[in-house]
Length: 288
Ligand SMILES: [Zn+2]
Image (cartoon, rainbow, N blue to C red):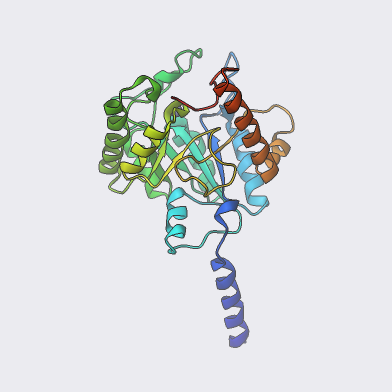
């Protein structure tokens, strides 16, 4: 009986420690989570709490395990195995509803997530949403971020002031990138290793600054290679968009490799057209 139990224990350990494949990591991009629909209807990147819950239920049912970029970093350095189907759930901007709406559901499903917070403590509202009606809302406090951190979440930087890097001098961009890291590290008493480009403003100089500041990963939205691990400073994410029909089916499709490749191909075509002065840079995340 004892032997049987030992064999069973060994099997569960070896299954748990089977190294996962970083190429299988899926990175989801969320913004706001709303309890009720707004009037007029909210931005397409803002989801209802009930739909977010259905997403996490889907991930659980289909064997996904939530990880953070810190887990990926530990895996890269041989210190932690990856699960078989890893998923990184990210929230941009540090909205208060990430704490009030998303956090309880993430906890209910035994998961964890990543928040990209705007670091300057004087930025308390989402002023970048002011062009949308009734949409400027409070952001999380440092204490709330610390509570998430203590619950296993990762807090990354989304710069100091959520300014568009295409309108900043190199000195200002460096300040946004480096000082936001220090402020968050001081508030959270732990290292901050991930960065999220505000407005997706990315070029080689900005990318290099993020590396030089000591981050180990940086996320984009539409830019970047289709396979995770090819460019740690241009991580493509899957934008989760509000849907009224086929919610779970469309969510499931977005997690498939074929979807990631097709979106990447479309992005490459549009980038090429833009370089030929055809089309706009909207959603391309490129600054010159
Ligand atoms: Zn943002």
